Image 1 (spheres, rainbow, N blue to C red):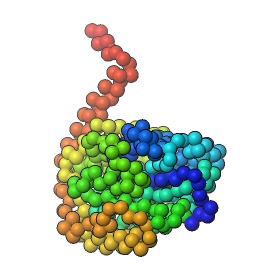
Image 2 (image 1 turned 60 degrees about the vertical axis):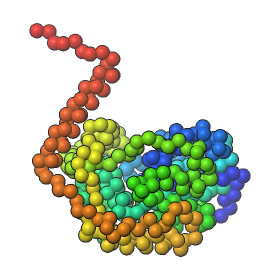
Image 3 (image 1 turned 180 degrees about the horizontal axis):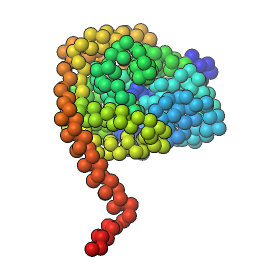
Image 4 (image 1 turned 60 degrees about the horizontal axis):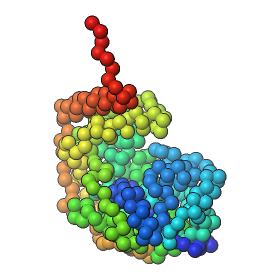
Length: 362
């Protein structure tokens, strides 16, 4: 644990994990800055972009690659000043990519908080693996993954390959907690257990407010599905597109993200049009065993738990056979995607030009 972190104000550092309702939660936070301020909660980085620019980048984070660059001490000094100058009895930082941070990044952040005279607590949101696995495969597709879903599950199970290593960096909650208790004592490390959304859609907001220490009424809950899932057929179209791209659009941030990811996910590739991605029956035993290991590890760690830790272990009947994906379904979805892309490209051109082009003469 880092020594000597003490300050005049507490700061809650929400580190994810990814795919645990963070998109909805953060949407609620960013649209409730004024209400939270009235409740004594200061938001120094109101939105994902400020978190990326002022927190992740200084810690050496690169989109799609993680914390791979050296620390930027000048920008970390700027972060310190921003934290110091933000009002509130307690500050709140929230970014799910932080769960991947290693000891060097955590030590650097600890130094910033110390100099800003802030006393940190950490919040980790967690969710059962049966729900996380399909969501993470889709997320990895958005970072050029080409592995079919069944093979992805096998690699994760065996902890084999780069994608599996990345998955467990984000989803081994015990390991994440052990890394981040460098920042605070275990009793100041809060674990928020997110139950299935269908059972209790407001639980993540309620337990998070409890962990940070503000009334849930200060949070404007977002409407609709903030980060909707793809159907299995549509996800397969995305995967095959990644294969077809090969080495083209190699620079993720400058090329792939604006050309592919942002385009497909803004109304071009249909959401939930086909059967949802499930946990197949042949994987349920190891998933339940791993989830129980994590449940026991979190309980043994002395952390402050919000919600029911048993919800981390999916029930035995959670497994469902994967829906069938035929070549005809993939072809139909690909054609529909191409049609949506044509419409979107035309509408974007109209918006940019401000007027229609004159018809050809003759």
